[in-house]
Length: 148
Image 1 (spheres, rainbow, N blue to C red):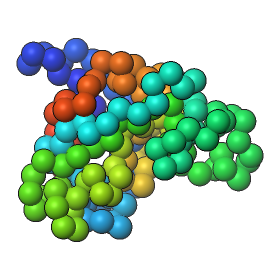
Image 2 (image 1 turned 180 degrees about the vertical axis):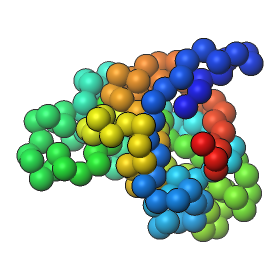
Image 3 (image 1 turned 60 degrees about the vertical axis):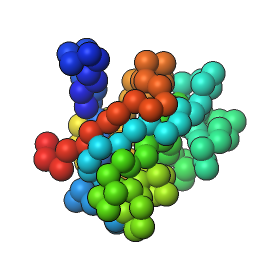
Image 4 (image 1 turned 60 degrees about the horizontal axis):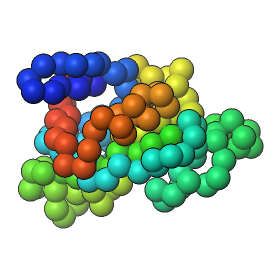
């Protein structure tokens, strides 16, 4: 993932997108493509590795969770909730990114970053999730390409 500011790439991030093919349809578990904006930045002040359920911190970092929970793809550290901006592509009806709850977020499986491993979200390291939450604001534009 590339972070551009004023037309210049200021940083690159290692990410993981969906294990499934890119797709904008609900229940596809594919990462949606097209132009998006950051709808919400969630988790300010939470410790590195905090686990979120329903966009709320559960009060535990992933390393404190039981083994069964740690095998799941957890949402950790920070959430940048995405909203599609292209009607019929990633906004509205059965292709609505916001209603699909697609995020950029930290992961408890950082070793898998760089390979497809999510259920539609864009995963980054926990450190990068916190960094992004500090430099990206609501309304920031994000373009997700269908091609790598």
